Length: 421
Image 1 (cartoon, rainbow, N blue to C red):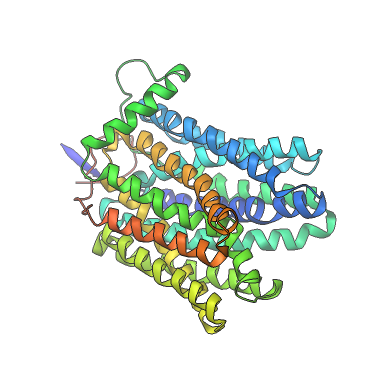
Image 2 (cartoon, one colour; image 1 turned 30 degrees about the vertical axis):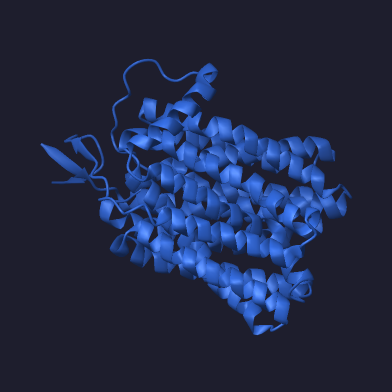
């Protein structure tokens, strides 16, 4: 007899809570306090941070599919999640306690561990949500994750008077506290170990190429990954700091106004995750994602018009619409990845999912710099170029339809979590 996997509620709640932990690190460490310490406090150039992030991204591009395929082969993902989380926490806790070069190396370690951990974390989505509720669970994770942005800001505000080492130690502790429930309560679906020997490190590049080739065997997967590259190219560039620069230099906001715009976007990102949680399962993740990309195009065009006209109300439309679109994007695209991928290779393909995101993180800022500086067209044209990337992603994804959600069956196992016939 075959049973449908029904996760325990404690497993779902723990997975959702890890999204909050992730965001404490992403915003508090990478998005705010480390750049502030390195550039403002230590007087180091932006290029030092960019090089560290690029090197870390290159490692992730190679390592993420490898780690994902190893987790597929073992039939277990939690050990990798625990190991990478602990590595990221330890490296983060040591930031600013050493000279800038050593701290940059530690940041690189934390970034690699964080991003590889995200691969196995996302691949656990089928284990913590029934097929018909994956959009809901993913959306709740996104919404709660953006609450983590405010938690990270709060931790920093409470500890900054004691210096940056205290800030990073506190952020590392916050990351760990909200991550620990996932170690204790997430229950994975029973999966048999794959036959044959596990992939080895010397096979990294060969398996990476083979993984990309094999995506053609699964309808819509290659096009989805190409589309994801295009829209994350724009989104990661904006949330990586260029939106804040644009707001102050082109939209006429001071530092307080820029922070308020960021807070508005974060608040509406939570709303976007909640809305996505309700709609993704009803409409299908890819259909919802295409609608969200149209919202992105509207928000970015509003930013371009606001910069040219100086009409301030449009600035806040960018924050509201962009925030909702941001939450909706991350709610729908990881569910789409589950629907398009075979369950037995989900970890491997989530490695490719992470790879295209890291490539986009490198190419996006280069595109912005090329348009704004090298071509001398300015930041308004650079934002317009990012809008074209999102539009191209929408065109690519028009050719990808929503497949039926995968139905993961498993044999009855009285020792496993509760099931439903």
